[in-house]
Image (tube, rainbow over all chains, first blue to last red; front, top):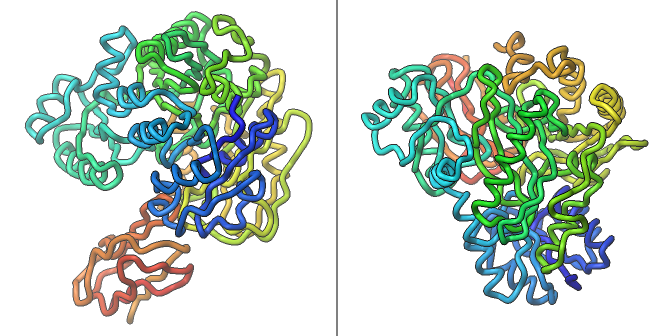
Length: 451
Length: 71
């Protein structure tokens, strides 16, 4: 195992990775920006190195400075967490070229999955189910009209290099296509540096279900169950749970096999997530994308399997075998639900940075809090609004819902805006309770209040 | 009567879309703020002419800071 690992991230995920480093006896090296000098991850790490000013481009995205920090601190590996440089194949290559281990997949697997069109085609050719869509980027409006006709309205316009729902829109007929195309292209150019766009069939009533995998890099892949992440705002997840109770056993078997096959096709190494849309009308499964990194919501899988996914990532990166037999991972037990605690108002979901004057987090049997902040910290406008992840485990789903609702009600954060009241609303929603909801749940909750 | 448009949160000014003297109507985009990896368009809440644009691209605004005045 490594002696020292540099954690190239901040907030809750840096804290989470550092915790496992401590447990494995690995020296942890944090990096930080000037805005994060007093941050929790800096305090928790054995060592911390300043990268630069607050803007991410000059700190957490500054690849050269991070590699230099790893060299100075004698790190043997770099764990990228999620976001920032975690899915940047050029950075992964630079890390390896500097003689460091990359805690993630090979740059080749990352590239195969980075472009959504390439990934869709690769998966389709490997027999993984994908939604009807374009096999090549859309050139112009005429081309788009033609493709949309073939696919059938409504269609989704998506950025090939995209993620996080940015640049995505639904088009119901030929009239809206030109405008949607233009918006998507300009946003894709700005956020991802590539204007490539593709079309995909829009599925009106769907669940977002994903498969957690752990690959050995040689085609062998362990499947650690699924997560249902259907509760979203602005195409970003708010609540995630495992297992996905809307699936029948045969449907679950098809899903898990599709996830295994997707990861195996690219000889996936380490932890990754294969995302699918499950059409509630046809009950068909459609590959969406593969996230080639640790996922925000990995704790729900850890709670039902007992596996420390970060520890397994580090073992695989160090060339060791996982702690369990690859073909027979621990069977999931009970039910876990996570709520993402964001610094944003629970009505319109607008961000609200601020100084945390009070932070009282719940604790108890079956409650897990992954926090990136504590009392006295400042939530700045520079980074994403995730302050903490609140998770609950119970023997069954109803129990987990009750426990999470109570924990959310007991969680007090004063200072920044906080979305905690939304947890209570979702967990008390009849459709959520009976697991009959779809990805439109939050939109529906907010619809009557819309101006 | 001048309408003052103020920032709802701490944010960076990403783009100034409109300029002083422009005629605007309800819903016209004036400025785009960025906070916590999210774009937040600031729009006119009524019809009129822009008297002042109080921010420039790259500025940091605090909650309550003046962004624009419309008369």
